[in-house]
Image 1 (spheres, each protein chain N blue to C red):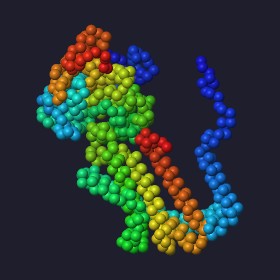
Image 2: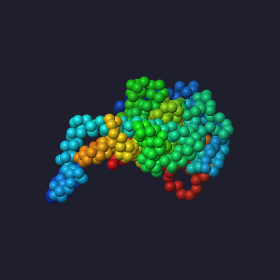
Image 3: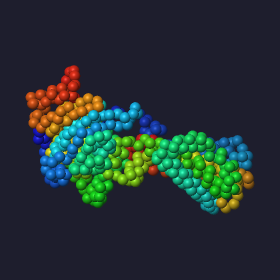
Image 4: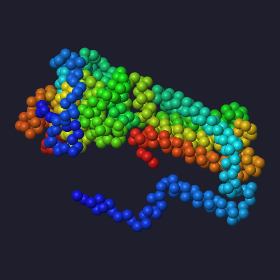
Length: 277
Length: 294
């Protein structure tokens, strides 16, 4: 019988303290603390004006107050709501186009052409037109978001459906699936990796677009979103609030990354349709 | 036909070992071929069928003319070299393509759409639904065909046991080896109790050892279920191990060169087997050294 110790090589000395062996969350926490430390140190040593640069402490205060009193929570909610509806509209437009493309050659050509024209266009670029058409209101924002979201979703879904493994479709027909169930039970899950990629890209485009649009918008009032919040804070020289708005944007961005990560691990990673990253 | 014991899971057993698994003596689903047609009647009849498909370079004629039939509980092998249209023939029986001429009749019905009465096992490993567990891959087609969830799952478990996969019921396809994936596909097809089971080189992508094992297992399983088999291959040995009659396709576009009875050729080391092997090689017009193709 072989002894286990013979097979396992001796651990190198000092390996326990190696950076790479520490838990991931801990490594990021240490880095974050270091960054905040440098930030605070710069603020203390350089003596930079409070109107240009806030200390992490002031930012934390503004962040905390903003969430407790509801100004940040309200603006964040407004932004997310518009974003969700905008992406929803974009997804519907994309689905319609993809369905049309799946049914006819002319539909496919149309989809390809539209994607080629509109996908490279930065979302905010259509804002002036949107303002002209819809006026200075939420509808203009929705239009801009829907436009930013529709194209990545359309291109990914269309690729997803086109690359579905023909054998699995043959199996679907062989076991007696109706056309409707073939779409919902075979084609849809088979195209899921692409659908998720499309949604991720749509979210990223939409998120950047809505913040930028709100900054340009600059409308005040109860309806303003996060971009408006930052813009207003700048106007009134409340610099810690400007930073707090940015921190909120960063945290939300990370939160959605995590959310998509969980969604992927529960579906396409678990099913071996995408390798874990 | 050599009676071979059903090897439930042979991974740890020597190749020659034949252990009768006690768990399989019980309620393995009984013969279903009788459902299709009266005993001895023909379940599948291929009558002067001409077949082709549209490819990149226009219409490609694959089968010039083919006529044969498959009787209930029979195991028919269609053999031919690559390009002989044997897979096209299977696709036509499955209902994926319509014959240009002639008629394919299954259990008395012609011009059929694809359906579970002709369950197919494909060559590709990725014929399983990756988003469904092994059990669900077998149970879902049953639900599609009117089984209730609970009964479907129970039946799926029965067939997973038959193919020696009970231990893998909750795994996902990407966690399985190629041989296991093909066994799931076989369980899925058999659970549907097809009038005729269609297999398109199901072991063609497996390594030689796994292929030999799965051939033996399939033999034992079919012995139990008495399923009528339509099996396409280019391997003479596979045809002799699994088949009762062999349809030899020849040429491109192909015709049926001969239909050979191979039920009594004996085990692979017998003189009858060797003789038949030579005969089939001649019919297939394979030239050069015989280096084995199983």
